[in-house]
Length: 242
Image 1: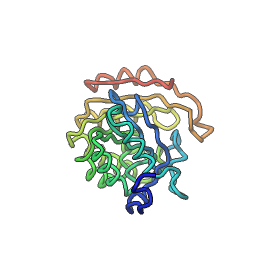
Image 2: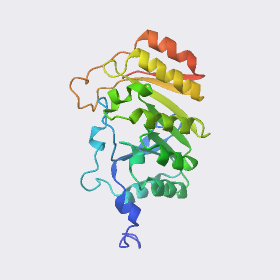
Image 3: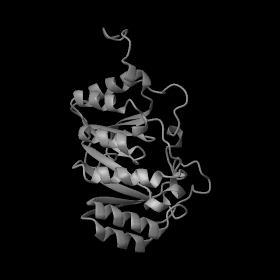
Image 4: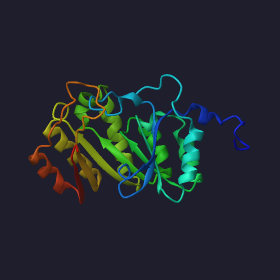
């Protein structure tokens, strides 16, 4: 025990819902070595979600923040930063305090978000070093993916905030033919390019972790779609399911 182990935790540490922790990742922040903190809670129910166990905040958090912080402190000098992922990390109202604490440890901060809470996201952006923005489809078709009416307008308000923030970012769209048509995927990419997004990834659906049996199969990326989207961005990546 350290001299502070018997002290009460700050209120935000009691509220934060850490559902998972990866102490070392080479893929969650392109070009960086990062730890990943997965927060519980998401207002959307995307059929192809590969972390459905993180969608709800029912019951006590599986991992205490002080455990996470102790591991991060041990890894200073070995990792470049910390990525907050989910779920939808901006659903956790303790996220601003957690970000501030990570910065106090001298680590950079990355964020994975689908943009469900544009006001919260915009307030956080000055404290973020990199954003991985999960674009679902074009605004009109969002409910087909998320199951939530009005999600498109919120996501695209967030997309606009990220694009004009000056924060380094990557937009990525996961393609599954049963949820996103090639035309909708192309329209989404065109809108992202219009916002000034320069780095874009088109991702094949991964069946791992998906709870929906009717979706839990591979969905190939149409070659024609790739050919139409790739020229829109100065930096384009194609990510396969493997």
